[in-house]
Image: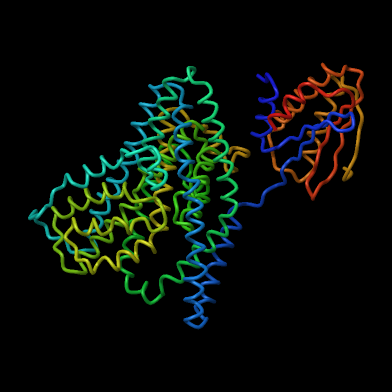
Length: 449
Length: 93
């Protein structure tokens, strides 16, 4: 029910219209400017990808000094700046949207059941993907059917991971860009708001308004995504040559096969579970997939994922606001697959014995470490060294792995983000928080932010 | 439909209904993004009924449609004293 100016203004804003109220020359004036029809967002993104490839090819024809200068002096700093801007707003956005999402759920019982279900799905998918990868690996790699193992202390990474969730102060998570700690704070503050609710109306109001502000800023930033995609593709073309990529064909082929198998399993499961055709699902997941593949950044993909979940998949706003930021941290099946495949490939390449004990250790350690990989382009390179140490792989294998971490970032982000949407839709179905009319409709619902 | 036009109407129930129909036809005939018309009409209707309460049913208002930087612009003008609800909304816009 409309009770005052605030509500009317909110209604207008929700419609994507900014009304102007004026009193000029003795006249009350209400001016509204309906938005013009938007071009399909996929088109500028695809153009950006094509332009990036073309520009990369053309830059390759330039003299070495000029192309190196261009890469080091312009493209890489520009890429880093874009990532910096995205991460700057992504952290407060994750914090506010998760906190607001928890508060919006309405009661603690729902939070408990949704939170447990979602986390279980996200983490379960990581280990499910790893088990599938381990099984498929038997077709491509030498695996010794024994159980001899020299296992290091398995509790170290797990315990450090748990302790790492707790921040030392309230500013550090944001200043250090520690996503896990930001999520921890968001969950704590969200639960506190949920518990106190009507006792702290001003805080609730401020949190809601801040959330709207940050979401609007992110929407502005995502308008620049085609530019970022162009720079990302160009940056990649400077970093890796075709000759370097060719030597790793087996690894790429394996990761490609793993990705296809896992995506097919995911699509078939979602299609059967949600009773939607695979074609419709692919169409709905395409915008997120393109942004994720082209930017290799979950932060950059955040708003597109949120929009797809709410607008195309018909997932309830409360669940989407709660589940997408949570998924960015915990839905890491793509990262886990690439880490596992790289590790087993390097083990074969450098003559490290891969037996059943090694595989089990690799599944556990990769599963845990996948969650702590920072959600930024190239973030996986940070944990490769630790993973290789645990799995007894030589340090020279790291150089290749680090290149792979950069090159394969797009597959990881792509798989992670697709998994978030699939898991969120499955949870929404179970919690009866999904609009089937929207889900099964081929045209996306308009005006859902 | 012409590029710019202006129509007058009284602030009666029928007049307000006429304006809401004009808004609908404007949104449908221009290249505007598909929006939820009932919500848009509810919002504009709320403002117009507020004006009706404050300015009286006999007040003649006008509905103007034009273009600004290739965007369709709809302006509804009600002469008279400054609307209290308008004043309240101005602080939140």
